[in-house]
Length: 336
Length: 301
Image 1 (cartoon, each protein chain N blue to C red):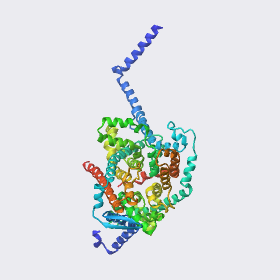
Image 2: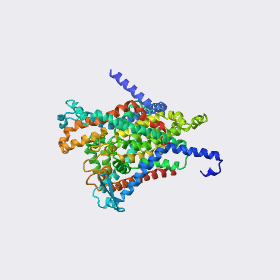
Image 3: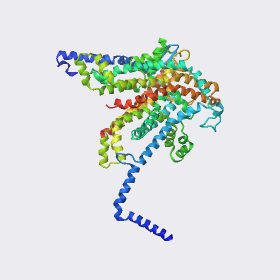
Image 4: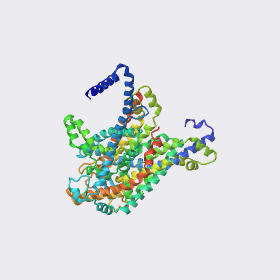
């Protein structure tokens, strides 16, 4: 028995010796590169180590993006007792759906939602149309001053809204338009809606990608500029149209500052949007509790209200996310 | 345009027709540019040189040269503080946001399974970074990821780094989530840029024995240059115009301007306009510096 074991040991030692001998160097190196390939990867395929690092980083960053949402969702379901109990962090003892009911009523949700929809969709549609016209004009026609105007168009993006909005606020209040949806529609009709420069730039890059021969062919057939625009150019930029419209909807929805300035003033707030109502609810809570510890009791309701204000956007985002994510890749923005 | 007189008459009318069609297409926008952007800006400049206050719906002005600007930096107790805070934050935030979004875009550009799921998550901020939502998140500490913002990190920073370094870095950790939450569009733009790099360029480099570290510095980064500038502009504007909510007693410049303009204790409308102009000047200067930096390297290459 013992002899046998010693023999085995000897064989093993011999094998190891063989493996590390000079003659076996080639085989050894082959094995080395094989393992290396598996872990570090090759030109064609990512290795295990690299993959692990990538996934690790993706998960960490994904966590940073999801954490606040999860936190909000959980807090919105906590009861007042759970909110005061610091030992309860993640799992509430009861699910308090009443929070949502209270927030729903405070925001006057359904009527506010439909009003917000109008305040957001109408200017967005106008923004899209005007951006299409302007982008096409810049992309297809030569005219004096084009370069300067295009530069000015880009420059409008960096002008603080506060600077143009304060004088506009004066005009609107002189005309009695504060609280009127026209405060949104007027600027967007004349191409000065929210972030319009971005939309023009996106569509401009897309129009530039269309081969000119297509339009020339139509023109030889006797089509007018307008006909060419509608029948040849527009169908080619359909994805861009959807993208611009969606981004516009999202940005208008989120722009609580402008909304509270033009549409949220006390007594002139028929068109107050959901974010404005949410802002108000928060102020009201601070006033009721004097900003003291009592505010903690309202945390669940506040979070419920906050979630209610973004749920329409989330519902829109998941089925349409391709338009957000892939569109900008396709437009070739910054190609110039 | 110089050839106008040389060319035959018929072509000239064609040319004019093209001019007119072009102007017609951009007409609405052009009117808007004059009426809703340039004119109000001129007005704001004029008001900034005046003492201007609301009386009902009327504005009363009295000309006083640059008194408002002087007041902002000399007599106003709050503004210089708010102003310096803004500058420190934005100077730190912009490079951070650019680096983070480039890294994230490169991660998303890898050929891996589940990419689409990560994309959906990473672009959530594009959809829901609105004032009240972010203020809720900040106010409740939801944005403070337990690990990162713990005193542990702050302690290390304070003990081992000089305070002029540790302060912004500490601030950065506190704001990590907010900055990342405002980097959605930047990731999109970088991603579109990365996908436009020709794959054969990388293959050629690797055949020549370049490591992925080298290809990043020699191929990826240089081809990202125009996108970096685009993103810098977007980030500066986005962070500056974002109605970032702060704790009571702390204002952003924008809320301070609004307060000066509309609230009873404010110095009025002219003062608000001059603060807006200062803000605009700083933003332009900041963008200008980056434009210069990124252009110079291009020439060297």
